[in-house]
Image 1 (tube, rainbow, N blue to C red):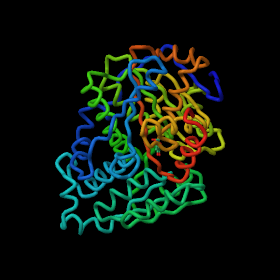
Image 2: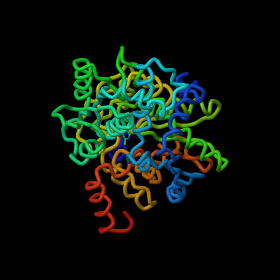
Image 3: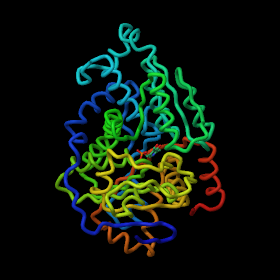
Image 4: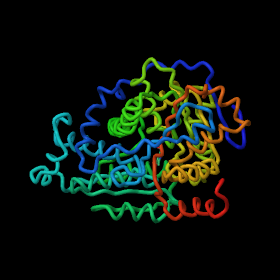
Amino acid sequence: MNTIQGIQYIVNASPDHGKGPAFLSPAETAAVQAFHEALPEYAPTALVPLPELAESLGIKAAFIKDESTRFGLKAFKGLGGSYAVFRAVCDRLGLDYRETSIEELQSDKVHRQIAELHFVTATDGNHGKGVAWAAAKLGCHAHVYLPKGSVQARAQAIRDIGKTEAVITDLGYDDAVRYAAKMADEHDWLLIQDTSWPGYEDIPRTIIQGYTTMCREASEQLEELGLAPTHVFLQAGVGAMAGGVLGWLRNRYPDSDLTAAIVEPTEAACVFESVAAADGKMHPAAGSGRTIMAGLNCGEVCPLTWPILRCQADAWFSCPDQVAIQGMRLLNRADVISGESGAVTAGLASLMAQDAFADVKQALKLNRDSVLLLFSTEGDTDPEAYREIVNICRAQTSAC
Ligand SMILES: Cc1ncc(COP(=O)(O)O)c(C=O)c1O
């Protein structure tokens, strides 16, 4: 393990990536594409070129997928929540999801059967918003529990959707997940949680599959430009998104030497610390959990994606909040509104232009042939904090 400017990192010098898991193959995720494309709010999000970043790094190209416009929800998370709600309802009604459309589930006949269904989840905000949105589409109820310290703006954005209860608890994220599972048990509600544990895997698996729409679109958009990614940096909370995207990319580009980095906040670095322990096991994060990257503030790794995060990535980073701030400002200058959890990978990439990071850049094989793919996974989900971070910078100097 090494540290530069407060950023800790591990690079695997001799990775043996192998293929991604079967549930993340393009064939297995075709139903995800069909489901999302049938939603009236569906449109591929923009893949934004970042020429200044590419130039500063001396690489061929850099792009960021801008998820701030996804379904009008300001974050990518609705991709997983909506697909999981759809699959759970199909399951409940004994319908084949491959032959069922969202319109059928919205018909009067089905509506009468599911109107009293309640969905429940714990969330930093973004996932719960996606679940509430999908539940509202079907006229169902949703209960969303946010961890202590969550901002009211995020809770209110969830309450504003359909028949939704959103409560800021006094629990940390991982305990809020356990609380949501307990409420599901006690009230016979359907738990739509974006992490797994032994015995609770089917629904998280569909959530992870749901995220793959984001990388499928990115790979098609790159293909239109005659490009394929050589590098991908993925931010992780529990690592469901990072593992899902990486596993899908390994299947999509089986012969490529794609280099993948997993990026977390220092104070909630469960993947990084598990990799650092080097015993193959998942370990809870030891940090304080105090970070502005609310979506990444998770203390326990998702067991379903842990094998992908551990074996199919090439590098792992834990970053102080300042890296996210740097990323938000950089992306704002490129006209991408990116929140704290969305921007950290861009912040990290931009640091690699500095001499201090020359060895890291070399270890990651970032060179003039490289095509770097990043995901801005949220917009300004905390608008006040966003304005403060970005405007202060603008007022200070145009260079920051
Ligand atoms: C904006 C944003 N980015 C990234 C993530 C990380 O996803 P995961 O918890 O699957 O690692 C989250 C999780 O809530 C998020 O809200």
